[in-house]
Image (cartoon, rainbow, N blue to C red; front, side, top):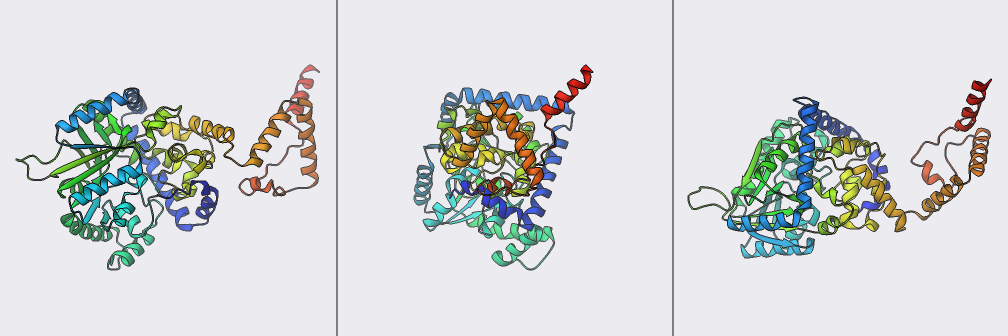
Amino acid sequence: MKNNANQFIQSADEALRDPDIQKAVPYGTKLGFDKRISAMYEFGEEHGEALRDEASQIKRRTLANLPALLEEAEKNLLKNGFKVLWAKDEDEANQLILEIAEKHQVKLAVKSKSMATEEIGVNESLEAAGIEVVETDLGEFIVQLAEERPSHIVVPIVHKTKESIQKTLEEKAGMPPTEDPLAMTRFARAYLREKFLKADLGISGANFVVAETGSIGLVMNEGNGRFVTSLPKVHIALVGIEKVVATLSEYATLTQILPRSATGQTITVYTNLINGPKRPHESDGAEEIYLIFLDNGRSEIYQSDYAESLACIRCGACLNACPVYDVTGGHAYGWVYPGPIGSVITPLLQGLENAHTLPYACTLCGLCKDVCPVEIDLPHFLLNLRKDVVQTQKGNWMWSAGIAGWAWIMKHPKLYRWGGKAAARVLSWIPLKELPAPFNAWTDHHTLPTFAEKSFTELWEEHKEGQNE
């Protein structure tokens, strides 16, 4: 997928002027935020925080032993009848998928929701080879019809209003006019059932891979995931290498905290463990299952100071909490992963030079860390990435020069005090709403503060003098 992350400021400006985004996104994120609190602390704050701590420890143990766990997972997956493949990057992953599709003479592929397939552009790759691809998650289906991309990790159409969804279904899928959400859902369900029955290939991701049992775990709220993984004769699961967990017990913990954080549910409607292709005595299931472990830059992250970011379980809680995402929506971030986690992993996966604006798409309020179910310190990573931007000179040279000048002034107390007084006097004589060029780049997006008549230092000195009298 094309990366436009460095266009964040321009895209955010457009989003702020989009009435649908300003109506739909705040409503959706608040709903998700509130439901998470209710579900996470259903049995009290102590229980909720204990669950977070346990999940955090599981993911960190996993990362500490990741190479060994991947080997164990491969061994047990093969024992269960999976065909395990490894892809170092998106080109290799797409080539493997195309080879499987060619081998099985695939004409139609159905997909369940998967961020990894979005990351490498599976749809575009298959369609270029003449294969029809249909997204079957309701939100992803609507996004595909609208020729857009998901704007949220969990809720792909959080940026859309009911009216825009209705218009898309009527114009792109031939739905009879209706304003009833249930009728829209029934139409989509009937439309997709035909695709499920005709599909040659099912493509999914996986929320977790259990090394101990050689199983893939999927959590979902729509039956489409089961159709995708059981009706077509061939099933491909594309999974990031960080999705492995050691034991079934750890999987059980993570499947409790993921829905609480993602959708505010105690458990999702469907929680599936797939233990291999269909056995002779079984009536359904794929006859062949390929599991592709995707690296695509994850190994480099694993060896960096940002390895903890791989603990992410893709719940989207940080997006629902983020005040920046709340007003910009997901498309402004310019790539697959939006919000605070996207502002961290997009520069890491795509290169800092291709996403140097994203570490600044943050107020550093810290809410993303407070809601993260595995306690990733996202604000710390965003600060470190800002440092990396400056050190690698990927940012704006004027900003870097301004910070260097500010640092120099800060080292000279007399100059600092004189500068503060001078600025206060000038701005009190000539009230400004914005700074002149080139400094207006700052006031284009910030309100110019009002300078106090006296600095804090002056007020403090007067206070001390008053105490001594």
